[in-house]
Structures are given as structure tokens and as C-alpha cells.
Image 1: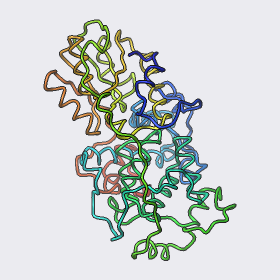
Image 2 (image 1 turned 45 degrees about the horizontal axis):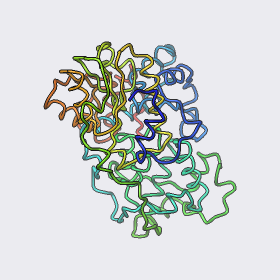
Image 3 (image 1 turned 30 degrees about the horizontal axis):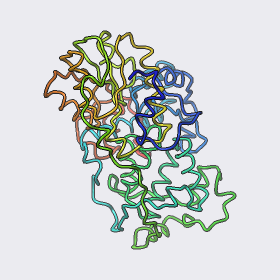
Image 4 (image 1 turned 60 degrees about the horizontal axis):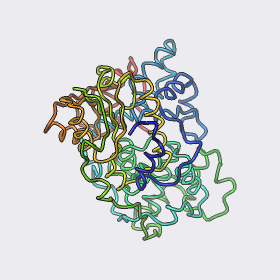
Length: 435
């Protein structure tokens, strides 16, 4: 299946995404990522980043899908602003959180789906997402506003993400894993590393204490966006000691008991593929597997193999278990359009199914003996590569390193203390570790 067959591809992926195709989605691809990077001015970032109207970069979807690398963003900004390194310090420190969380994922692997540490409170949690949350109709203007942005736009400011996570975990008594899943499905930048680690940071299973907010905090950093006109009884309207006692001394807000049916895996659609199902392809001894965190024509696996066959595989079993919102799918398809338009490789394919099975069938049809892939801490990349090694040589190409940190990543403050000089080129005066 080629990238031009988008209608057929969407039909093949039916049941793997939420919602109907729509216009106005965020454009994906490295070309758009570079345009945004080159246009971004971080001058006001340090002063405004915690405000919903702050001058944030909106580069995270492109970083998440490997259309840009964190090291590339850093080097571009340092070259663009060589005479004012302090201008970039806060932005680069926040960029380091992404690298830190990826190191957390590399260390824990699939263990990141579980609590890294014991919770710092004894309050129980439900495994059910409340139905009013799923519908975006909780009756709280701030929460419903955040949910509307999440569902319709695929974006939430980082501060709003923390507020919503605190609301769902602490005020509604829901497990952090359920919220992390909701974000992965709907956020353009939904991933495992930053997403799960951040939810655990809020819950207090990857931090010294749980994070929560009050009404004053929401009103201040939202500019009164919701609070100024809100007329409902606000569960956040108290000082922090009062809320702390209310939330963690045995009292929780009521929560719903219904979950959302997001579909089940259709075994008939994920049966092993035969080589003949792939269609005619010219022979090739090398195959490059492009996964959804390595979608750049500057990626080393692609740059070093300009004559190889190239394939992207939509992981159908995973998507049926946890469907993406349509806008997420469209962003990836745009990224593939842009990527394939810039590649000289003669064979560029999109497949659907179990990645290891589809890639093995394709390699067999090509007559390929070697599969190339860009490294990533997401465990499914290494697991797929391991399955392919049973029959093929697999070459894993390293990604650009943002910072070297060989120790177990337990707290950002410790990580930042060791890597700040690598990231900034000088020793910063402050080692703040707020998010």
C-alpha cells in the first residue's frame, strides 16, 4: 500500500482510530517541524511558560514522532542566539525533562506502566474513567474546557495537563494509568515516556509527594479563562492545607463506574500476512523500518541506506486495543507524506498489522537479509527488532544524544545537576526541578 492510498488506508484502519476524518488537523512532517523551529523565539519563554497564553514552542508533537530531535533543537537555538545563553536556559532545562523521561523509560521498560514507587498516600483508586469525563461534561467549566481542547484539538498546555491529572487522580479517585491512556489516545504528542512519567509525578508514585492545585493557581495561570465566569461550586476553592487534608486523609470525591468501550482486537484482521498480500516490489537486500518515533529524513537509518526499501507499519493489534484519535492518525500520515517525498529510496510502503510479521513477510518478498531501524527506548521497538533477529540481521542505528547520564534516573533534580553543563555549555546558577 502506498502513501497515496489514504482513503484505502483509512478503510483498512477502521476500528483503529476514534472519530471521523476531519479537516484542520495539525500538519505533520519534518518540513513543518523545521518551519516552526526556525520561526520560534524563546525570548519570553522563561517568564510565561506556566501561563496558558505563554510563548511555548508547540514542537512536542514533532519531537515525539522523531521529526525533530531534542539535540537538534538545542543546537539550532544555541547557534541562533550565541550571545545570550541565559535566554535559552529555561527552555533547554524544560527540553531536558523529555530526555530525562526517555531515560526513565529506557531504565524501566514496560515497568513504567506500573507504579515506580509506592504512593505517598493511602487513598484507593478506581480503574474506571467516569462517564462524565469521557463525555467532557463534568459540569466544571475548567475541566470541561480542558477536555474539549484534548478531544477536539489534541493539545493541552503542560500546566493544564497537570491540573487535569490532579483532578482525575485526586479529586475523582481514578488510577493514573487510565488518564495516561486517555492522553496517549488524544494528544498529538502522546507517548509512553513523558506521558506515563508525568502522570506518576502527579500521583506521587514518581515524586516525593503528589501534585495538586487550588482555584487560585488555576485562575492565575489561566488568566481567569474559566474562573471569572464560573458559577458552580468549585472543588478546588480552598487553601492548600485544607485540600491536602481533604484529598489525602481518607476523603475522595465521588466517581463514576462506567468505562469506555474502545473496541477489541479483531483476530481475523491481524492474521499473519503472506508475501503475496504485499504486492509486487523490486528486490532489495536492505530494508529500513520507520517507526512512529523516527519520522525524519535526517534519521541515520535512512540517510545511510538511500537505496534500501522503506516501510512503516501501523501496529494494528496495539491500535485496536488503544485507538488513536483521528487527528493523531492524520498527523502521522502527513508525516509519512512529507518523509517519503524527501527520500530517494525506490520502494516506500505503508503496511498494517503486527509489525514483526509484516516486516518479516516484506523482507522475505524483497529478498532482504538486513533490517535497519533507529533506536528508541520504547520497548516495543526493541521487542520487534528481537523478533526480526530470528531470521534477519538487524542493525540498530543510534539517535543523537541529548545528554549522557548512565545512572538510574530517579529524580530530575539529580539528573539536571549532572547534565546541565552538557546541555547548556555552562553551569547554571539554579537547579530548580519544577515542571
